[in-house]
Image 1 (tube, each protein chain N blue to C red):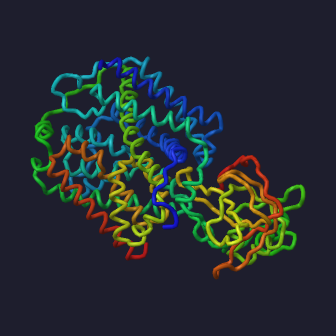
Image 2 (spheres, each protein chain N blue to C red):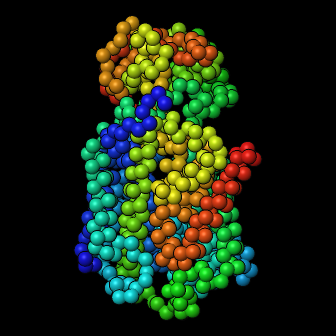
Image 3 (cartoon, helix red, strand yellow):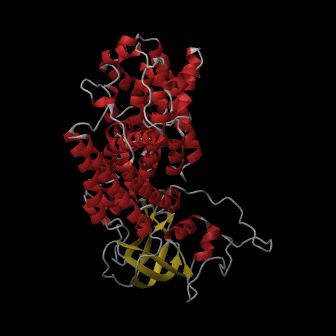
Length: 305
Length: 276
């Protein structure tokens, strides 16, 4: 290396940190406002009623539900837990849970914006298509598993319980409740976003980019190391594309792996998933997603992406 | 921690964020951080956050059944320690960064990121393939045709071409565009960085502009080399105006843009510090 591998400037770090925050906040805000409205005003039975009886079709439809009911990966977990308890099949819930943070209009918009000038349309399409495909594959695998090997005991006991809860209060009270849900989601997500941006800003300003060039030059290493970054950074899917776009030295498939794996599994989700699913299932999900997405991305590279 | 304290804490965090975002937008400071297409979103977000803070305080609320003992629902910020830590994480780094940030990168980051010195390395680079657009009278515009006057290029009062670093990188790659600049007087504004290579005489420096796709975090330094009669005592990453003659010699087997400077003078940052 011509220069030191690490040169820290607090001023530069602050500048990069602020720029990503300013850029990401609007997208997170839109997502959490929608999540508040959905949480308060959308009856969960509506989703169940419109699902096809055929399991495969139901899973596929669930994988696209994020287009109509967009949720980020943090907000979607409490929602699917509620939906499962109201009778939604677990496989459908997992398809929705994994796909919704990617297959949703906010993320499509932000991915397109972040990759403008870098084949944005093709990249966005690849991200959405692969996110949907992986979610459906995993959901089909889960469809054949017994419930007690997937759900935590407490959640399993809720499955048979009928949803007797009735929303109380007038319109203004319900608006207030939606607003509180939105605020809670926003603050929860922002905590993880701030932490992720901190690591990202530190990396992008302080580390000599020549150092990571060897990682970027090998497709296998680049792809799997980017998924590792995604897991560590724990970014929100509404704004992770802006950070992925800064890894300019990495091949497109490695960025794709980052953008598909990150919304499906990262450090913050490890804890949140564990509140709904059994620990062994969560571990299996992590390994399965890591291998599946990595292999698909490397294969895409071989095909010439 | 009571529910009321939790509510005031959340409203406080939202208010601080809202004020900060609105300040960045209305003061114009956001222009140093984001691509213009994101500016308005920042302002709107600031205002929405302030409304959310007000709504949180004043809209009617119902008792949360989840506060009952034994609730297993997911509430990340329900404990007092978590709430306090979350508020600190949300507020302190943002305020410190806003106070410390100089609104531009320094030499350390520019050096770490490395220069773009070939137009092919620019993220949005598209080969020069499309024909020029017709002018108002239907004739072909002179873009990249080697027009002796290069009349389409903006000029300053002294008749020198007002160029960008990226223009000269394009010109080094495209012969027709090169003819528009070669041996012509140009005026460039950029940030000063000492030359890192090919500077045995000590009479060269790099003129840098940050190329941005979305925000400063993805900014890449685009640099061209400037040669002057004697070394100038200029601070790293300070803004300078260079007036000189554009040339495109072959160095190390590659055609590179080189400005033979007649004058290098400190100047204020341009209105748009980024190039897009």
